[in-house]
Length: 421
Image (cartoon, rainbow, N blue to C red; front, side, top):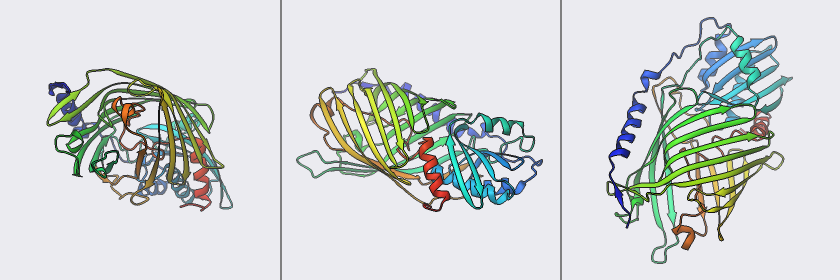
């Protein structure tokens, strides 16, 4: 029988995060561009197209720009839309140097040229040159469409099917998991994602049939440079875990990243209004190699080390990208136990969300729906929670928050060549 702990500390912590989330007007900044702009039409069109945190500069026949995009589905589509918008506003420009960011941190730089309606693009991680040019420019001293302090509400569905029982065809659950997210300062993301059961045939005394807090976390991106990327997240993770997550990645080349994931977590969930914990600190450390092959659109991801609950082993993911679609298979070997399965991510909703970027609260549907099936989930593997890899942010998949330079360059070129839309 699980021991129950007092909900006082955990509940107070959750209340503090929720209070911070809904007090974000204190952190809002100006959203208007400077009147010194020599081309206000370009800035207006970028805002109208759904871009945020926009900075622009022009020198000779080169346009420099940085921006973020939460409205447009897919980073390559956002980059392509930005290039076409800027090309129409700067007809004399033939070279474009862009930075696309996330949460106030730059992620990828793109160099593009447009000669006789033919685009050539190159994606890389060195954002320093563009940042320097933008900092030198007196034309746009303020950021247009600043998204800090605004609350994004995304209505995420969760579908759970468990078919390992002999007395039932399957245990089925359909849940609504709206995520409430905001950025308070550079590199920050405050996330609250409760999980509300809408329909399930799971017993009422099972926590899987009850309301859960899901994700309640504070994320901070520390570094996003030419070679390194680092971030930390503290809070509640999917599923039934609480603690600290840290990861660091090194860009070996545009096609290969090497990384390290470190976690210190405890199992924590609510049952009948009380918090249940295993009162153990689980240390997980995984070395990760992530390779993308542009000619085949194939992604290979190998993770080796100790999984979330401390069991030692490895996981290999093989993912085939089809534009916005991703279909993959995986295999796990850990301490003599084997498991395998498949996963996929498919786009949802419109390619561009509604024009609510000027609103304080912005309601959205998720860009993608991702799902993973585990084939062998029984006996020791299930009882000891082996091979577990959690999600520290709600919409993490092989398509979202995937900033691999070779992947974005490949699909951005295809988008500009009108081979995909």
